[in-house]
Image 1 (cartoon, rainbow, N blue to C red):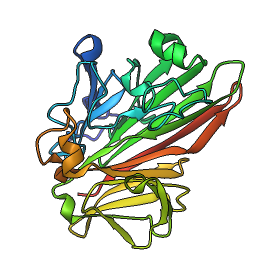
Image 2: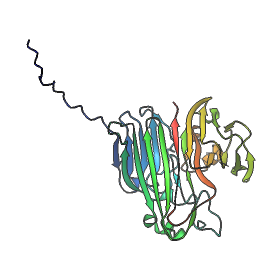
Image 3: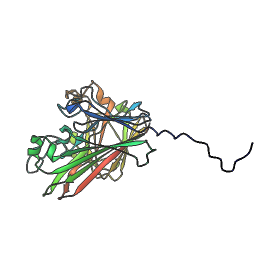
Image 4: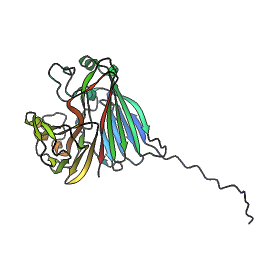
Length: 320
């Protein structure tokens, strides 16, 4: 065979583009939700009511990481019991008087407002389909008249939820869009799903002062390396030096909760009696299958002047 010096190279078929994350919007009205699924199977579901994350599955979509009550209201009739509700602009019962939030309901209005889906963003590398970011917005112009009357301040919130193969990042961006300053608190009320609360321990809080709301809001210092739960727990750990709190099951790390620009963490489990008193906490005994590790800025107040922005959030890593 004669070898031609300038013969054409073999033609190769163009490679098909790698499949990217899939994002769907389903439902209508207060029941609308956004679902994102990675090509590898991991998924997240966010209800537009409250921008509440109601499901996060890792391990190829096989492992649910968030606890959601069987009686959670997903129709916009009340705040969702479970998942990750967004608390803003006040945590817990508001001050009785003399503060801008005093007329608000417990935990404010963000978790009971309908948010706007602002769209998705994927990696700058078009071939990288390993994560997807979903943005949601809430503004003073589209909260309810009741919320606007109770807290007549101009603000903008952007909530970013980023799903990766083994982690979920949730970040709140708060902007003061008015002429006067305002104070606020914020919290990500995360309900983590566990197998048996009696075998759960929480590390990363040693030496930290906390307010124990079960013991008349008295102040204590965490003296044990691990927090264990054998009854009702409702503690606010403040000014935590370490950024990572680890939830272990039977001595094996299950979750890392990594705070970003947030100094406080609430640890909560209602235990049997309080769980039984909540109409939307179900099934019976479900308190043994959940623990709340809630990052936030709740000890004192964050203050924003005109045009200023505050941003804080968390990355939860599934360690299975």
